Image (cartoon, rainbow, N blue to C red; front, side, top):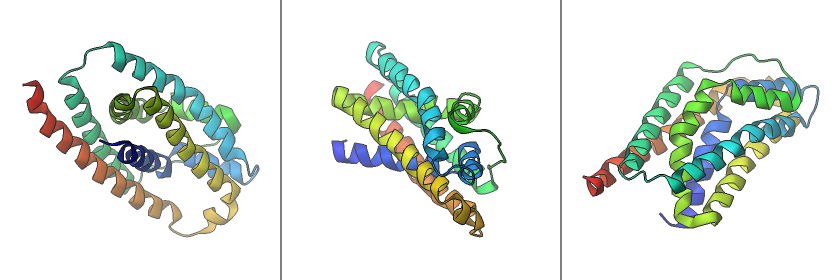
Length: 199
């Protein structure tokens, strides 16, 4: 995988997560009506949990010989993406009431799907970033967090108008699910095609 394709993959998969209606989006819309910049506060709290996880996974990937496990992790990531797409299409959102940075921290740390995502999909992206050394890690963190700050910042700023649009969250679910299905298929296909290298 070359660097532009890696960057596109990171942005696309990151957007599939941040676009998905769920606790972070719900609290951002709710808080945006009170504070236009709440999305940045929520994203900051989210990043406070995410960045240490990314660094831990990168360290794990560098110092542990994964071998065939890379293919297994990629396959698991693909399966999780299909499950999350299914969950989105069935309606996985929820009403959440919290405030600011703390909401971003709690909605991340206490969300089991967040942890599962990082142990499968996220770990696969971290392992891909290792192909480009420290540049890959830095690019991954910047691109991933930029998606969070950009989208949640936009949502909170225009929260009043967006919440009035009928079917807004449903459209986001369809977009998020489509991205998840495409990259879930890619992850699974890649894992199967590379598994023979370890057998």
